[in-house]
Image (cartoon, rainbow, N blue to C red; front, side, top):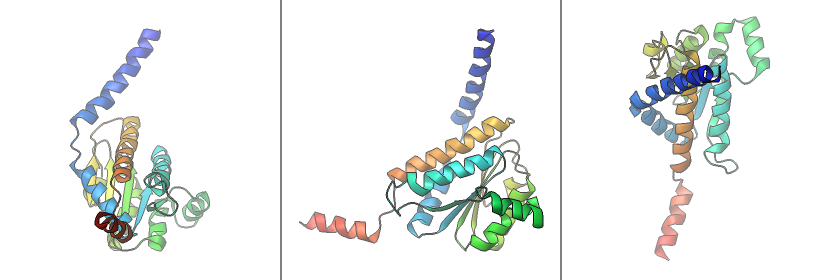
Length: 205
């Protein structure tokens, strides 16, 4: 029995490892640059997703709010649109579940902000509506997708697509990408004018 379990877990690990080893990370590098720009220029980053992806959005918002800087007031202006149950249930009840993210963006979002949509299928109506709202408002949109990418594959400005037919591995990959970005941003923070000025003073002493 244990050998059968171990075989199952080994197979899962192998499938995840295969996706990681075969992926091209160029689009993740592009997202890293855009997030650093947003951080430097005090733009906002919004994350959204359903179910496990909603949990991932909240997790990563925490990482980008504090974890990339670990200094009071120094993190990204980041929001998980899946985090407030009062807003979600209000919008779902009054307007419709497909608008729970788009309506928040309509209030909070501004031009040059970033939306990162997390979706396994790429076909969730509320994710599609969020990307459409972002486009209307001049926001840059990214989508981290599994399966065949769905409608979001062509709707997002940049689609980071892992063509894996497994929802749990697709959700694992959202966090892998998110943690890659967290660690890179932590090691590559934008140089503020003050930091640059202080560096110049030290070099001239």
